[in-house]
Image (cartoon, one colour):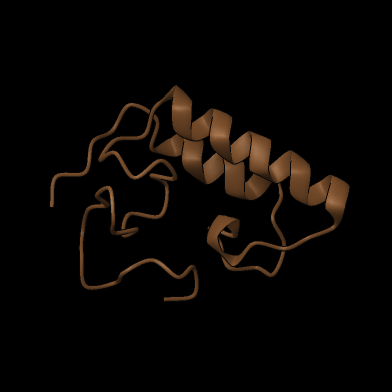
Length: 80
């Protein structure tokens, strides 16, 4: 709930953002999720903006700890 993803759905789809590490909402975590997360992370640092959606560990900051969480799911598919 904190991230704004749908807690009642296991997997994301084109119109539903459910699985937190799947930033691209395509059912898997791959290089595109890492790239998009890193790009949005870099812009949030530059603009000093905060994105709850990217704060995967809900610590109030978007940082490398959140990117590390995405990396732990690299290569995985949502199976829900």
